[in-house]
Amino acid sequence: MLRVNDPFRETGAAPPSASGRPSVVALQAREKYLIGALVVLTLAALFAPALPAAAWPIPHYVDTRIWLGLPNAGDVLSNLAFLAMGVWGSERLRGRNDAPVGASWFFVGLILTCLGSGFYHLDPDVPQRLVADRLGMAVAFAGFLGIAAGERISVRAGEAVLVLMMVAGLLAAWVARENLTPWVVVQFGGMALAVGLALTRPRPGALGVPLGGVIAFYVLAKLFELGDATIFEATGHIVSGHALKHLSAALAAWPVIRALRPAVPQSARS
Image 1 (cartoon, helix red, strand yellow):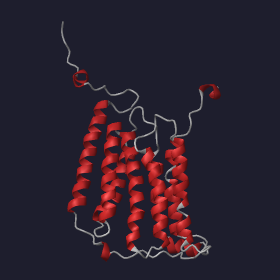
Image 2 (cartoon, rainbow, N blue to C red):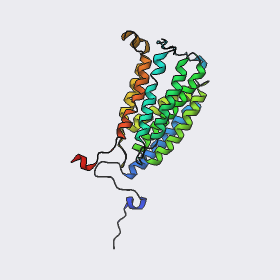
Image 3 (cartoon, one colour):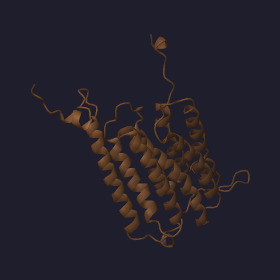
């Protein structure tokens, strides 16, 4: 009998899907690209020129109003949005076995961001308080990148990215007291990685988290941050751009929470 060689059978990979979904071969190629991107980010964090934290200007936040004895009340209380979204998302995860990799850490990171950022904004003139702010952000960001890699590449890729970015982010947040370079690489390099993952097709079996929505809220938050004083003046001192930054960044959890909505029973659909 004539034997025809089947490369997919020999490699254990599935042939390309007629539905347009990525095949196992394509997913394995994505893992290789992911490894390459992580290597580049690691080298940049380790060997790029240092950005001394002492030479970086201390941020000046325009809304310093006191409310009920609470200093900088607008910037402090707006962090409660992180707490609300973190608790809501954590509740959505209860009893689910199909949650994306990193989702639980993402929501825990939002709660920690509320605590850390609130603590920092009570007295932002103390640079050491920034460490608490960044530690919470690092946990949330690692969780998001774990979700992104798990949704677009593979579960094992999501788990690996979650662990690596968690360690890198926490170390970068600590080192940022003296050298900001690792933190800049983690924040902006990690977001570039997230954009690349958002532009790829979801893997078979993925929950379908709209990564683009998360990124859009993050970009909007950055714009609000840059327009802190302008927005404060434009709104007649009602709200500052930095407070809106907190609200927008917290809303970045909404696309993830929406993807975790309870499934509608088949009987209810009919």
